[in-house]
Image (cartoon, rainbow, N blue to C red):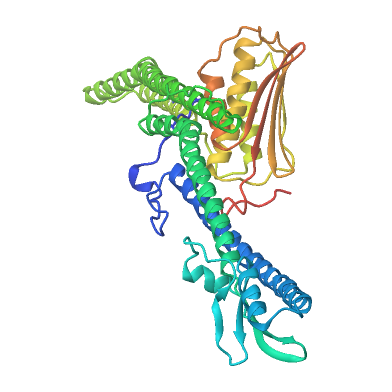
Length: 481
């Protein structure tokens, strides 16, 4: 596999068994948002109605008490004045006059009795209306009944008495009529308000249904789902965020597709390159070994004594061919897996990498600055650092026509800073992204790092930042002297 590619498809959705299961408990379980809001408003209305009823009862009780007291005091004065003004009238006429005069009084009842205690006529006061408050309401409002008795004295002789009794039922009936009318009006208004609220919430919360359908599409890996912006500002923000998430997921899926294709292409290219090297390099070497072995066999099979010089020459040829095979084998293994990575300090591996570049490209000056690094940061981080330096240097050699390449890796503020700078011809604004650059970017972003390719006249610079793993990466992670 090429040095700059490490592609692993990203899982976009967890399996169904990994999704959290909603906990269904309590009276709200299974209710829609609109039903819950209506229930909350209804509960608030009931609480307000209870408080209002309590306030009405308290105020009404106090009002009835004050009203009956005032009526009692007024009627007492009125009865006393009437008796005093009618002092010269005959006793029988006076009692009848009092009986007739106080038949229309409010909140009190006056009964006139003669000297023997017999009641004259019917109890006085305004007749009770036919429509009366229910008993439970009267019991809540009714103040204590008060009764006063005034003697009727004519010519210094007591001819009877006037018994004044508070009678608040007519006042209670009026309060009941007012409270009932107010309650019916309030009930109708609240019903109308709840109906209107139900309709309005249906329209306001309708985008939530579209959001649920969109989320279902995303769950089914359909990332073309988009929501129309609703009129509500908050829901419009949610819809906009949903569309951005869906777009990002679609881009990620497309990137994964491209990366998978690049991975397959890179694997095919790597296999083709290895096969070509085996055919072009190892094939001739094996043929030469076979030819030398056959020559040695013929020399040994001759009747005459073997020519030691020829045998030594054939052995030297075999040794040279074996050395060539070993060198090509090391190069091949080093390309598949950097030699010594994880066994020797990371800085030494990077130095060896630049020395190998200098050996193969003697016309270019390679500078490495790898001071202050730990021995290692874990196999994944070490391999990523090595591949990024290797790929960046390879690009500078192949495409940048650089005369000097400076590679630096240092640890700063809990991050590994990688910089590869060259003095070549740089890159154009419309340059494409090859397998090497995309592979480096994928490697770095998989480690939650940052990758950037910038112009640094006259050449270019690659800047990479990778967070250092917390804790020791392995048993060999120690500071180098």
